[in-house]
Image (cartoon, rainbow, N blue to C red; front, side, top):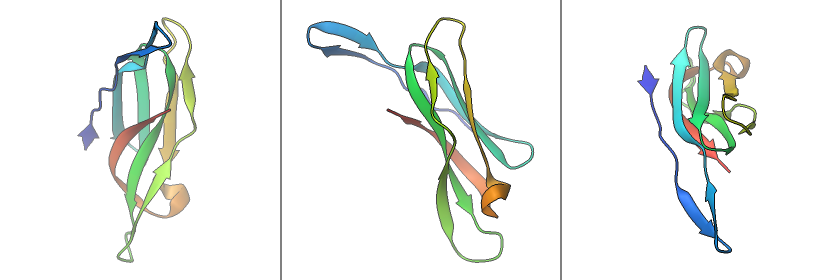
Length: 97
């Protein structure tokens, strides 16, 4: 299952433009891990994932570590392991601050 998210905008703040992260994607990879990375813009982001219990009827939201893209060519990856929470990742998205 692959989910892609693009998040990016130019926002005027105090008369100057600030670029947010852009060219972002999220996905679920082998080993029940969710990933997020952004290839353009600058800012801080993390992977957010819906994680469903294989035994009980519940779903929780789990998050990877915050990552900051600071320079061109820098593409840090945020990841989260569903096994750590004893659940199965079913959907990923991007959380930006």
